Image (cartoon, rainbow over all chains, first blue to last red):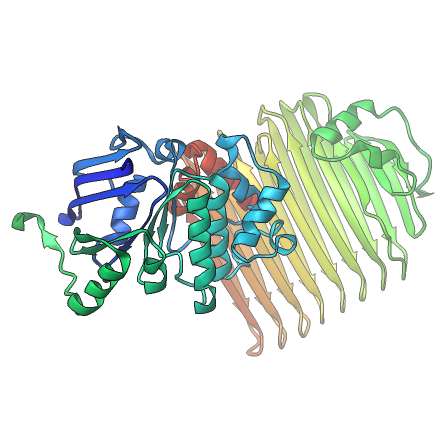
Length: 246
Length: 320
């Protein structure tokens, strides 16, 4: 099997503490891969490190994406290679219209048509007529901004979409739509790394990994991993290891 | 001063048309006789078109034009009135004195474009007195276009009186070209049940200097106001903002909101001032100065934009 992403002994320290303690992970082409784990396990930190955000530059290990080590690449360079990230809490953009925001990710793919813009909003259950010319700012609820964030992933058509808790801030009824959206990303050719607490989302994955205290404890069948997490890992003390302990 | 019903006064205005277009306007509206318009270059009134319900008195002075515009009682002007002020040469002075009255129950929208595309040493002063009559409404948008040289002083000063039930909305934007030196000084008295909304958006670069002073006195019961200021400065630009709202009457409500983004060596100061002397009035404020939000920048970078392009989009969005 060919892998779009391979992590080897990935380590990250912040404020003198080791948050990622040697993450090993493989994600296949067009694979939906869930990362589950308790709060503080390092899941979001892993997402930020993969995207190369400021303050989340890896200290050790390698990130092989599409056959290339991307450790030295900037956020923009990683995005141009085909990685993108949907934040758990999306940013607000005062004065930026939804249509312009959605078009940004498509600029390197030859732009976007009106139909594609509308289609992306429909996929996240937002009425295009109502939302395309609104601002991605204060006037939208957290749930609406979350959906628009996910729509921006659709229009970008990345090789690897990292979704950090795509269900947070969205009502339970919409979970099915999120699952459908993740499947649609896969059908469009993307691999998807989903960080989630939701069994429903993990169950829709091809594979899942359990993360605890900055390492991947085990990877495998999503239902099996979910069961293991529920029955064996709660409560988790979420302890973060100081540098000196390693 | 001559009393003129606005009508056919057009001359060759090619240069101003080009400048007007460059300022974001559409010069075709200046020659559309279904719409009111006024074009002033330096101290010359180049053209004027009028519609029923608008009376204009104008007088050319040594350095500019004195204008008195009256929207007659009960007239609701259906299409915006377009105003174009500017100077084509690279140096000069333009002083506009504006006496504006919206009589009782009238309604109008004024769209002004002030254009100084070649300014190297130019002073543009506006001294306005505006009266919004009982239940009248004025929407006033002023957009500036300056050239790349920064050698311009823009000194708009206005006193606005909003009578009972009147509405006044103003939007001042100076985001194209260099600011030069801007001293914006507006003062408003708002009477019973009136509404006032003042928005300023300015983008300062190089060694531009920006001073904004906006003051609203909520004198009448149930008067309401918002001062909203959005300023972006970069390089060595300097900005000072004072937004003052006074609540003097029961159920008067006011809010001052200033957001400034700074980059490079720019320096910003924002002082929202609230004064209340009536226990039933309420005035609130918020002010924030800082760099461009990191998460916004990183989000756009994660969609493939370079950092500078991401910042540019965020700043322009804030000023949109």
